[in-house]
Image (cartoon, rainbow, N blue to C red; front, side, top):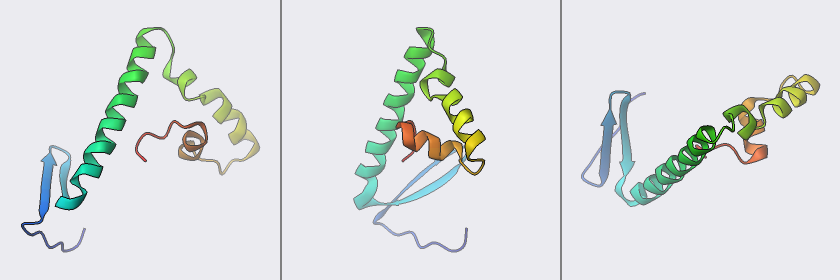
Length: 88
């Protein structure tokens, strides 16, 4: 949103969902994060194939129980608490 200045020191990445402008000196961080997300999602997929539902992997039942006690608890907060927030 808004105006952005892009210059030769930026990397522009795009796909069907949109465009991302990244300062070139931070591209390594972005790729490290992307690899971490990919690895986590692969582990989750492997566990699903082995019969462990994603709901069990992220402790969804525990989240529902905690949310019953604290209605303001978000699923993102729960994921952070159990180490399941992959985008951070």
